[in-house]
Every structure is written in C-alpha cells, then in structure tokens.
Amino acid sequence: MAIFKAPVDDTKYLINEFLDTSELNGNPMFDDMTPDLTDAIFEEAGNISESLLFPLNRSGDEQGCTWDDGSVTTPDGFKAAYDEMTASGWGNLTCQQEYGGQGLPHYVANAVDEMVIASNMSFSIYMGLTIGAYNAVNQFGSDTLKKTFLPNMVSGKWSGTMCLTEPHCGTDLGLIRTKAILSNDGSYNISGSKIFISAGEHDLTENILHLVLARTPDSPKGIKGISLFLVPKINLNTDGSLGNPNNVSCSGIEHKMGIKASSTCSMEFNESKGFLVGELNKGMKAMFIMMNGARIHVGIQGMALSHVSYCGAVDYAKERIQGRALKGPKHPEKAADPLIVHPDIRRMLLTMKAYTEGARALSTWLSFQLDVSHHADTEEQRQQANHLVSLLTPIFKSFLTDMGETVTSLGMQVYGGHGYIRENGMEQYLRDARICQIYEGANGIQALDLVGRKLPAHMGQYLRYFFHPLSQFIEENADNESVQMYIQPLSKSFTRLQNASLVIAQKGLSNPDEAGAAASEYLKLFGLVAMAYMWAQIAVQIKSDAGSMSEEFYDAKLKTSLFYMQRILPKTGALLSNIMSGSDNTMSLDAEQF
Image (tube, rainbow, N blue to C red; front, side, top):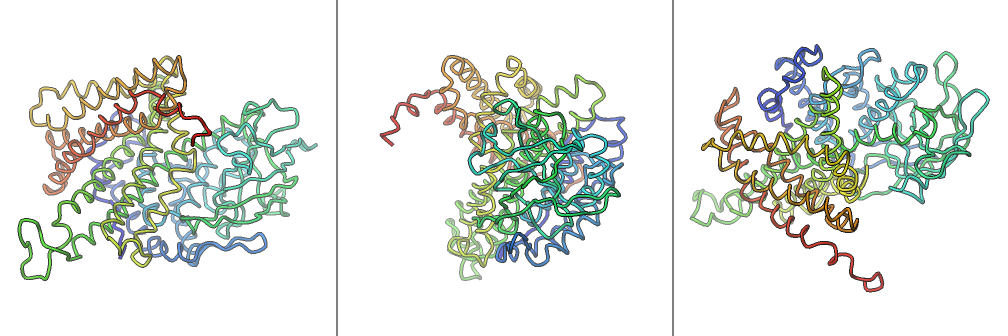
C-alpha cells in the first residue's frame, strides 16, 4: 500500500545546516527565519499534508472531476480541504503581508510546497496557479488592479489561472488569435478560446480570475503584439462585491492520463470584460513572470512525486519477503528474506534516494538564489542571482521532471506486478509525473531555451555565475583527502560540461542544428553536474562540521552521495560522447524516410 511520510527531517537539515543564508543577513525577513520558526512550519506542513491531503489523493484520482453544463465539481473532500488550507494560510506563504500574505522567503515556501505536492499533486495545482497569477498582477498590475483583486486572491476566496494555449498553438504563442477590443470605460472585451487551462473552472472558490493572453486589432504580428489581461469569471460591482457573470464559460474538461482530480478545461471568452495587466503589447514579459515561477514549481512537482514514490517503495521492500539473499539467508526464521536484501532492489532504491535528496538540496539552494534576486542589498547581487536563476530554471524544470518519471517508474518496479495494479497506489505517481515533462514548456523546449537563449546571453555571462563558484569549490577542496571520493568525480564531470558548452557555443554559431541536436543531452549533462555539486557540498559540510542530526542520518547522506558519484554521475561521459557526435546522425534522414 502506498504511504507518505513528509521529508521533515531532511528539510530541516537542508535549511538549518546545508544552506548558507549569510548573504541576506540583516534583512528582517530572513533574520526572522530562525530554526525554531522554520522547524515549526515544516512540522505542521508535514502533519497537514499527511493527515488532510494524502488521504484524498487516491480517492481524488479514482473519482476525478466532473463537468455538467459548464460547471466543474472537484472530488469529494477537496472543497473542505481547500477551505482548511486557505484559512490556515498555506496558500499564501510568499504573498506580501499588506495583502494578507505570510511574507515568507521562497526557500521556506518551496519546501512546504514539496510536502503539499507529494501528498496530493492534483489538489496542490489549484493553490499553486493562484500564486502564479498573484505574482504577475503584483508585479505588473496597476494599483487599482492590485487593491481590487489581490486581497481575495491571497485569502484564497478567489483563485487564478493562466490562459495561454489555444487549439491551434501551444508553444508558438505568436499564433494567438484571442482578441481584445478597447471599451469606452478603458477595459477590454476579450473574445477567444483557450485549451488545457488548469483549474479553469471548479467549485472551490466563488470567483476565478483568468490571466489571458490576447491581441488588439492593431497590434504587431507575433509575440510582440501580445498583451495580458485579467478577466474575472464574475464581474465586480463598484463596491467590490460579486456582480453579474462575465461571459466566461467552460466548454469541457479533458480526460487525462494523470492528475485526474485537477480540472483541465477548455475555456470560452465571449466579449468578456478584461483589464490590461502591464503595458499594451508587452504581455509576454508579464506572462513569463508566471511561467518562470511555474517552471520551478513544476520541477518541485517532479521531486515531490519522486519522494512519495520512494516512501512507498522502501516500505514495501522492507516488508515484502521474496527469495533469499545471495550470500545466504538473512532471516532464516522466515520463509524468505525481505526484498531489500537483493542488490538490484537496492540499486533501484538508492537511485531513487540519490536523485530525490539531491533534487531537494538543489531546490533549497535555487530557491534561496531566487530570494537573493529579490532582496539582496545591492543591484549587482540581485542581478547576478537573477542571471543564475534564469540559467538554471530550464535545467531545474526539465531535469527534475525527467527524474520524476524515472523515479516513479522505479518505485512501481520495486513492487513488481503489485505496482502495476491500482490498489497499491504506485502507478498513480507515474501517471501523475508524466505531465510534468510536458506542461509549462515541454522539456525539449526548455533545452532549446538553455542552448539558444541562456548560453549565448551576454556573451556567456550567465554561465559564469554557476561555473565560477563551482570551480572555486573544487579548488578549495582539492587537497582535502577526506572528500576526494566526492570531489574528483565532480571535477571530471564539470570538465565534461565545460567541454560540451564550448562545443555547442562554437558549432551552434555556424549551424543551429548542432546546438538543437545536442540541447536535450546538454541539459541532462548540466543537471547531473548541478546535482553532483549539491551532493559534494553536503559531503564536505558533513565531514567538516556535523550538526544536530543523528550520526545515522549523516552516515546515510555520505553513502548516498557516494552512490550518486559512482553510479549515476558517470552518465555524463556518455552524454558528452553523444554531444560530440554532431548533428548529422540526427538530421540526415529525409522526412520521407521516417
């Protein structure tokens, strides 16, 4: 049977011992984040995730959402859980206090998000999308828009969506046809169809605020002519109360492989009143605020599903007796030994553990860099952190979601045939994980973004903010004999990453297909090195100054780190070979020959 145990201890370790937050010392928001406070937050987040949300995960998957004449009903228990979560403030952790939010740093909020997602990914989507919409309105909306809509978004009374995709265009947003016509009162009439809109319609909130990409009649062609509009499901009266419906309708919901309890809607806007967010024809700038935050969130989804799958797999491997240990019975008093004695079961479990805990460290570190980009004292510090986050966002999204598919598949494999059937719950994680590689920009698009935009940006400047500290870390520990088993594999893989970066930069200038053909493998190479950097830092930190966790905890960290370095990181060698082989083997086959 699938089980879930929130990663409270690992999260406490990462926040209290692994993460260096000194760069933001003196900032009241971060000075207030004492271990007593953050530990209490993580304990309570773990409790509510385990007791309230996880019991609804399987039932929500089996029941799914239902559509009836434009209305969508979420599974039993979701409405009550949503009310409890929002009343307790779990849906507004990073929102500004002036609008009723908690005002917490991203590195704390994202750790909580992992627990919520792991316990019930479908449920988490409803709250997560509202935060994305909040961020866009808060940064680009007028004061009137913010005062009118943000307080009820922050409280959870109203929810938000992001409406990009149309039936004829997905990634290529320049093809958008949804129209925005200026009205006499300064608002716009929005007309068009959107598809694949998560949480586009549901019964959890009294109003839904849609952030819609559209174009005015005289706008420039392509993405340069796209604007962003806030379109409420229900209009507001002058006093802010709910008024008449706004001609926003849900024409149907998708029947999906996974995340069945999350409504994925087709939305119709028929001269619906909308309000411009930001500048006219500058909608993509505002929308990217939502999308970049969403991509980090999706990476966390891949990690969270990996964790809950690992919870079920390791519990089953310890309890299920099957066969005998190769060196002889470990439990001769029993009819067979537990699965966990077998090397191949251990290989799968250690792969799951190494990926998941390495990803959690990377998430903690990257989330803090996001905080630095917003709150550092100097513009230079903020800009450097922003460049680092921009570089790593496509890597984080793609690498962790690919990992999510790998790990949830392994979790099912540990169960054997019992993992393939629904009653044990493991197959749901694989089905839910699969969408993470697709939405918010498919992973292949993320790879193209990495090699086509991030690498050449400012003559490779973005790379420096990752390469330089990593190089310095390796140099600082080059003579530390106690950690060479971690540093040397990191150093070799980093050299491969540098070589691959140089090859792609040089060949891509003369032949874009060279960069395109190498993009996905380059991103995986980068992700493996980034995770190795986290594991090496963990090993150095534990070797130099073990803290308040148990000796068994630290020993397990060191052994898992070594497994990653010796059994997973060597994949960088094969990836470099693939990259070096060039694009001819990919591009030479004619379309008719496929």
